[in-house]
Amino acid sequence: MTETSVRASRTGTPRAAWVAACAGAEAVGLGAAAAAARLGEGRPDGIALALVIGGGLVEGTALGGLQATVLGRAFPRLRRLRYAAATVLVAGLGWAAASAPGVLSGGAADTPPLALVLLGAAALGLVMGAVLGAVQALALRGAVRHPGRWVGANAAAWPLAMTLIFAGATTPGAAWSTWSVVLLGVVTGAVAGTGLGLVTGWFLPALDGPPTSGRIVLAALRTHRFRGLHASLVGLEVVGRHTGRRYRFPVQYAVAPGGLAVVPAHAAAKTWWRNVTPEPTPVALLREGVWAPATARLLAPDDPAYRPAVAAYSERWPHTPVPPDQPVVLVRIGAAASTRATS
Image 1 (cartoon, rainbow, N blue to C red):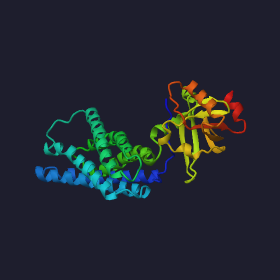
Image 2: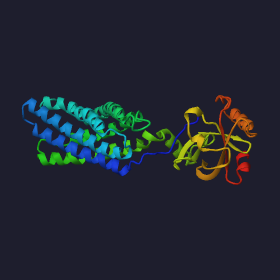
Image 3: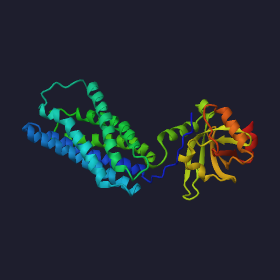
């Protein structure tokens, strides 16, 4: 397994604000969609369809506007209007398109089993989430370093949200009053939006920082359940020399004379190792579930410790090439680092 380069999140997006924005937007949107669907009952198809489309546009506008507001505070270069318009186009019109067949059938079609409805809702959420994420990612370009990760975030979140939405939408009966239907729509939207916000919010730091895979690995390294993982990877924390920010990420290592040898794969594309100097640099190391103070040195080929470190790394990872002039970082744990690392 090659080293995974992960930088700590730079996004200042408050998770609570993001979840609240998604929940509020879906509460407003689904309340409007429920009202539109109920008001369209018994009306000509054209009017009923127009009402459903209007309800979908309210949902898309609320979601796009509130999400763009929260994201814009974290990523000032975000083109908020473009992001909101993309959301209206996919989320609003997509919801209207999904509702249109039921409206135009006048409710005459047989209702499929609930399990089939929810399965279809999850599938619709997967497709719509991926499309929505792709369109929103275009608006995020230039504002974040990794806009493409937003596709996976939405593809992961929308199946849950759509399942909750369809579960609520199939609950009201013909005897329900309009206000009861609207209230259920608001509650369903709030619950579905909360789920949407929690899942996508977990991915938010990956837009401008570490990929979620690195965060998962670090979480696994904090436990003692994955012995094989501990034998291959450790967590490393470095401090940016210019920004002062702390960066945490998992790295592949080998036990070497004087410490743990870490070889930054594709070093030209990485930046974390540039925060380590030839002199002992304070860092932190996550090993055996505990973060501990450590020091690190950047080894150049003319450093006496360079060749032993490369030899130890190549012996431990024979299928991982170490190019000539490859920078190597030697990490020592605390004052007794040498003894502990070589034992």
